[in-house]
Image (tube, rainbow, N blue to C red; front, top):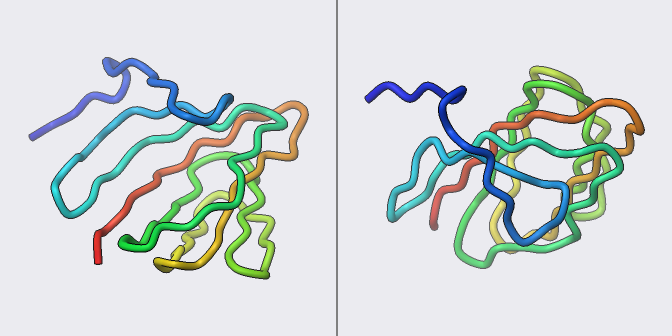
Length: 106
């Protein structure tokens, strides 16, 4: 199946300044294109039954995994293990971030 992301609407979720386009949604996981506005913070949280992953397409989001904080760049991939606290922040005042964010249930 082919998906043209240009034709999909941006959907806003629980956290202000984060919106996404669902690319794949299955019982055991999914994949979204996520846009992170400037100065946006997705607060620290964890998932007891799924592993998440992030691939940075644009921008330099700060990704916290457990006690480690990473300033990322385009092309970097992050694995967020289940039951480990994690957060995403775009500290830029000028540039949005674009991420591929997915999950796999344990």
